[in-house]
Structures are given as structure tokens and as C-alpha cells.
Image 1 (cartoon, one colour):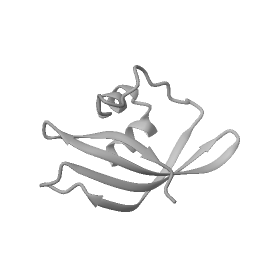
Image 2 (cartoon, helix red, strand yellow):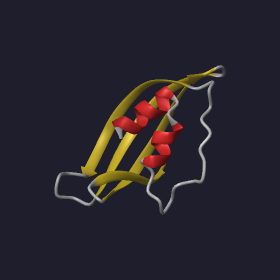
Image 3 (tube, rainbow, N blue to C red):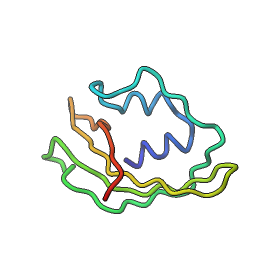
Image 4 (cartoon, rainbow, N blue to C red):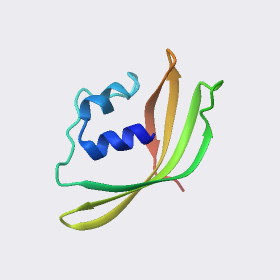
Length: 94
């Protein structure tokens, strides 16, 4: 999760696509150059340990655009495949 946030902050769309599971990965990803990511807060995690094959991370990402500051909250689902963790999808937490 932290590496994906860092990739968003640094504009590394290639890394984001390569860490996205093939079952849900888009063909391309265009990042908004006007978004500046400021902070990541991990609110909760479930599973995702060394012996798990799935895991979830609930986070709040704080950013800024020319329109002002915003917060993005998401509960992200990850799966381990071939020894590596991949982002599958995410929903807005309740």
C-alpha cells in the first residue's frame, strides 16, 4: 500500500500498473499532474501477513489540487500472486 501511494505521489504510472492485479488492471492509467499528494494515513489492515494470500488496507490519502485540499478514503483489497502483492480493487469504507 505504501509503495503504491509513493508511486502516485511520484507520478509513476508504470509501477502502479505493474502492481495492479491482471484481473482488474486497466489498459492504461493517466495520473492528474495537478494533484499533489501530501500524506498517507493507514487506518486499518486485515490479513496480509507472511502466510496470507489476501489482505485489505483501509487508508486516508490527503492531497491538494488547484481547487484545494481533499481526502480520499478507501478500503483496498490485495492478493498475493507468485509471491508478490497486487492491488485488486477498492471501495469507499462505510
